[in-house]
Image (cartoon, rainbow, N blue to C red; front, side, top):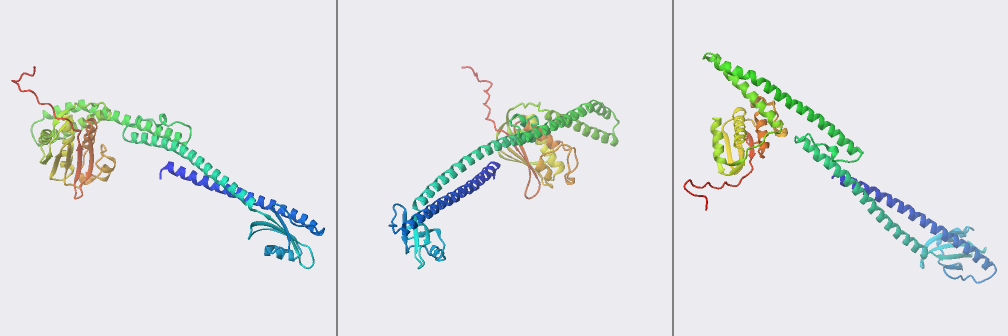
Length: 421
């Protein structure tokens, strides 16, 4: 149940309970008031009838009052009370409807003088009041629930706005500020201010990390160039070959760091063009020099940056070869490319959080600086594609690249054709 429904349900339940409790209290008070008034009227009429009885006058009254001696309809409880020599009154249901009785003994031989007052009008007045109370309860509950829904909707809308902005921060838009979207000075505004503070601190740390990475790469590039030149001047031999291999690995690492810093700065712009996918895929596979089983289910023309596509697909294939196990399969189906190896699969941290630079925490996937998949994901973002990682049910890591489609390019006119009319 959403927060809005929880608040609305709580407000509705509380308003119903309060309205019903108040209605019951008012009902009981009005019933008690009418009964007390009817009993007072009955006792007053009984006194008047007793005076008329002692003067031997006619006891017949008009309207709601009916006086009689030894009335057979007198309730048994009231008759038993009078038999003890006391007077009293009682609200009881009889053959003629609900009535208020008052009785008193008049002679030693057990005669009882009683007065009956019809209670139907009072009961009708109580019923009318109950209807008014019911309407008031329904109206108050409706108004209260409506007000609660409006308040809950405002709170929920502000929280949803804050949650959307927080998800944007988690997606990398650390310059987003929730306080600009959430107004007010309540707890929600306090939460937005706290998230903004966290976002600013996170943004500052990310900028520091990106700046440090770029500075380190640039500082290493100049002495590394001299080191590469010096390594090439060494005399041939096994030690020279080892030094040159390590220098080239260090050079590749520095180039990767520079590439990551450019991707982090969001200054990269793609050079998009319509590219036949099959030709581009086979070209990339040939550049990697790996043994890859290519399956072409359907060819397509994609609008992408060919250089960045080479970088993405090449890094996926190299990662599968370095950390996975053969055979390496590349399945192309339209604008979807799937790279699968038969190794231990991607670690749970990568599946949950995505590629993380400088992290290769699973020993069986080998060692490395963890920049290959990070760079692939960065270039994927630049060209407007999507890259997902999963593990195959029977084993092996699976990377799926979805490229945007593009219309087929218009054919170029033949050289001997005159394009002018």
